Image 1 (cartoon, rainbow, N blue to C red):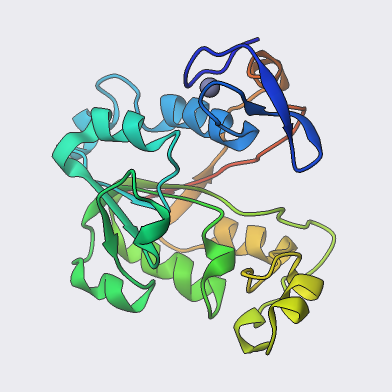
Image 2 (cartoon, helix red, strand yellow; image 1 turned 60 degrees about the vertical axis):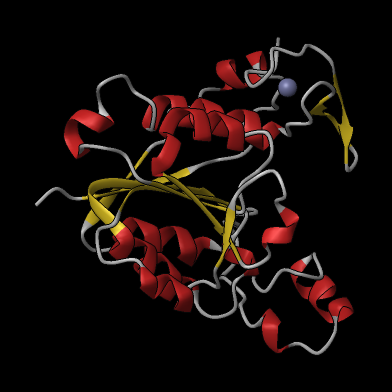
Length: 228
Ligand SMILES: [Zn+2]
């Protein structure tokens, strides 16, 4: 059992969840799974590049544990962006509000788009956001992302940006800066999104155990835009 980001073998509890955080590099369970997913669906040798040419990868809210790995991998083709770049001092991060500011990028610009726990912070409807990401993807490009939950037994609740206090948001959306709780319709929307298909993340509980991640933890969405 070891961290796949730094090979560390000691883990501590984080927000009450035992073994969640790597003591050495600080990666959380979902970051360790993220790297495993990128190894399967983004780094395949000769795979993506062969199909798509030079890779151009957009990473929103670039996590400190994953950022150096992606930078090493994609070099000048690696673009980081966030509405609050100050939160990511380790990265050279463009200050851009999604979706409006992303009009600066033409259609089919990125070979891959990565965002983890980002959609729930964006005001507006998730469907509009997913379609805008789809616009930005090259044919054959992949969006690889996670959200809290999603909560399979309920419908999505949105509109946190219209609530007047952090306390009200915390009560409805579980965190003061969350604007939505994503539910079953979110997953259906991805499955039915035109112009592409969802791919299974391929992560097994056996692999999770090797990474000190509990069963079923951190399901990833991978959506691939069709080749034309
Ligand atoms: Zn580590």
